[in-house]
Image (cartoon, helix red, strand yellow):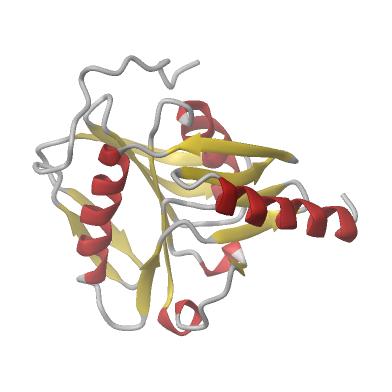
Length: 192
């Protein structure tokens, strides 16, 4: 994709976000993707962000900020842990090379992207850790050891047990016993 085409898509993203509040918008594989956001989604992000802030120091969690992976992919992780000095710049787009930890919260329309597409894209960029919180399955999938085809390490932690991640910058502990669980909404399984 040429630079002018990328600029055009980025401009479209900005307009769509303004016109459709309550939708998360990103470019995945050259396509503009819009996902409605539900209350459980926001509450889960809020609780995880509070836990990650406990790391303090020189790192900050940022939410729904664009990370430009290439001409065909501009992703907006639900949370990304980046250097504080970069977060303080308050930009609209950042390099994915800054991300120490990416976090996604599954929504009915994002299952494949969160479990398959982003697994591969985040790993290919060398993002050390990727967490997928799933309020429909009541579990967190922890991914580490990035490779060219995705993450090679995987654990699943059921809600009710803490998610503990050994990051280069310290140990993060996220309690899951208060995370919302949606047992009413039926979604397509992640192992498609």
